Length: 333
Image 1 (cartoon, rainbow, N blue to C red):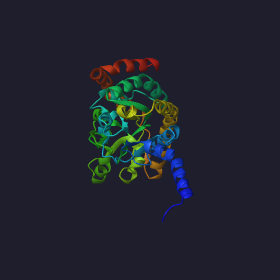
Image 2 (cartoon, rainbow, N blue to C red; image 1 turned 90 degrees about the horizontal axis):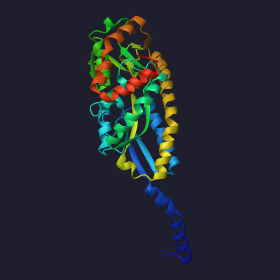
Image 3 (cartoon, rainbow, N blue to C red; image 1 turned 180 degrees about the vertical axis):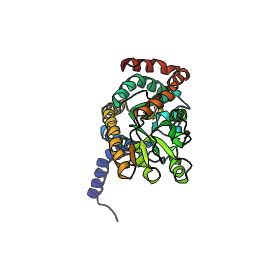
């Protein structure tokens, strides 16, 4: 079948009209983001919100595709290196799991350093510049940082004194938590999230040191009975982009992304503490009991782990100035 001249011209004009849209679609830079957390986790919800806003702010030029649940094959402690080496262009990773590469990343794990969300914000003011330096020397740029909320000790038994914890085998996410609970006489092991549920199911561990958010992610009520509000440490997720990838993004789009991250980060912080309250309620609704440790038990925990701050500052000299500045600002010696 032959096309008439007018039909052919119309077809050609239509193709030309569509060309800019096609070029824009072809020019979009697609960036898979690695994260080990499941879809419902607030960090993943935040990442998807960020991705949507980045697409809007860059007119569709940058598309971040959040790959939750470790789909890309990287475990939590591998993610800083994966971004550094360009194995993945962008990732959302837990800072305290990166201490094998960058020991300073464990600073929030110093026991009982920040006593509240307000103190944590002050701590971040002092440690964020060092995080930025670490990112730079690992070939990446930090886009935003969001803390995990309050930490709990999830157990099969109700512990009303430190002595009741002796010998209980628990999972921790990082060495900082491992050291804290070892000082309390427990038998903690560091284990990636992906290995935890089989370990709980088999009885390989009898408890978990983590947030209520993770407790809901893992449906801990199927394995455990009590969660104790010890709030012994903090940790944060860092969203960082590989610098070779970053350089491929136009300056105006870089500016838009940085401004967007700065705008959303406080909202994401709020979401962390909202998630704590929501998930603590879900844990109770699931059948678990929230335990508030006595002042005597908390004092004992602090006493037993007190040496870990000095140990950390000695092991990581770069931590000394920010910790001292933080303690001075919150008026603690």
